Length: 295
Image (tube, rainbow, N blue to C red; front, side, top):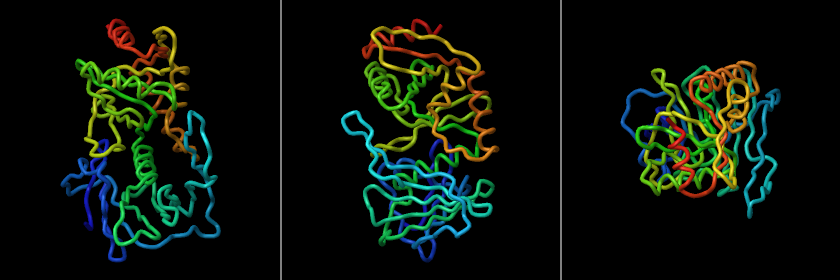
């Protein structure tokens, strides 16, 4: 395939292989997100080869490759992906955990809707949204649109949307399984995008699992979760709510404009959507507790 369009979290992402580019082969996790659309929020032109930053480019950010082994975080590489500023463009240079010979550079602008992706050692066919490119592309789309990308699981039950946020090990997957067992719709169990549309905050899944189906729901309550011996929630407000939600958001903000836009988005959401801490027992009693207190 030479081109296709994805609808992820309401973003229309158009991918087109150029004359010098490989065939495009989307992963099974994206197949349910392919749509027919003439318009796009971003067009990504895919090329063979490698684009290197200029000598005067400024490196803004470097991310290590960290994996979790038996509950411990282990750094396997100090340079997983990096962000450079080159004139008015950003260059995102990444490696791929499953293919060490393969490298990619995404050239993007925060002001333009057309980006270029260069892939080295792509072969005849490649997935242009292979991890970590998928997360990086979605993050910058969310940042440009003043939306939020957050570590969270989310469920919809009886017309109410509950978002459970926390870093690894806090119970996001446990919470989604508990709600799934009572017939709730699980929106996602790890990485969510929150967007404000027509005055309503909605949470969206991002494709992670095979044949993931696009899902969304309103956000009526936000819970900052942790495991505990008893179920206990405490509503938090204003600066405390903002700072605690920010701690779980995905962010690599290095410009004053991006930081101001990000803080404004979180502050506005926390002023409209109730935020509570929630210490919970990993059984059905926490669901009964939430529903009893969500009046």
